[in-house]
Length: 270
Ligand code: DGL
Image 1 (cartoon, protein in one colour):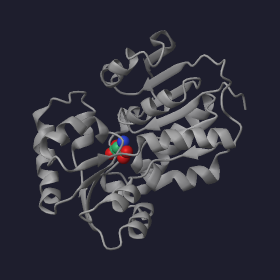
Image 2: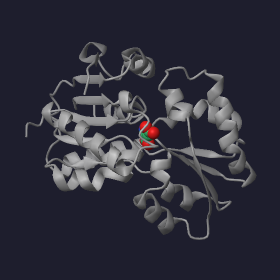
Image 3: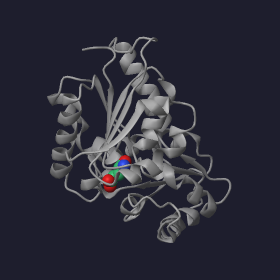
Image 4: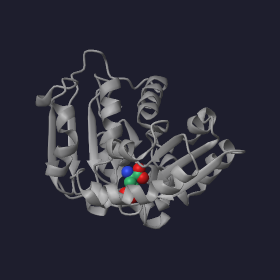
């Protein structure tokens, strides 16, 4: 495997760009290929078998594009399919799971909220992790039904988002949570709205930074890190609306973290 080959990243749509940005910021010499499977979003209400088949399709596309490692930037895909992917494909896989452990350890009120998809909250992997770390902790699990399709429309000002969030956060506020775990890679884009609704003392956490650090660690242990001289190139491919993908990465593109000339967005069916 060539060290300058890209890190492959996929999600059910644009949400995983929240993870992709963390990876690109931490690893400036690494090239990436990002697949936004917006055509098949949301994954959250699909069966485990359907999610697995979509993950196989995305993985094979990324491998065909030369991915040396694959980041499953989707909690729903990770909790339902990562063990299958690890068993059947020859590259390392990094997954993302709701950050229940740090929330449970740091909660002083012993009350945490988790907002995630149905597919994640119903998965065996989520249950095992949750049971392990939340003994003696009150956990309010809420399915963020309808949030991903709204985010996929590419308008974070949509009043429908705030209406849904008010409804979903109400039981968490009643339970006096002090940590809110964002268990879906689309949800970090809702943080400004969540902050408007939640009491000030509530800390919002997601897993983006931890996934980027884990990606670095795995590249390092597999001797797959790109050389320092490598000029990073980023390809973002969507089977949905490229303008929506553009909307979510525009401020990052112009932030100076990457060279905008080395980033392309294109629409392609996969
Ligand atoms: N970004 C996906 C996740 O992290 C959203 C799932 C969906 O498409 O419903 O779970």
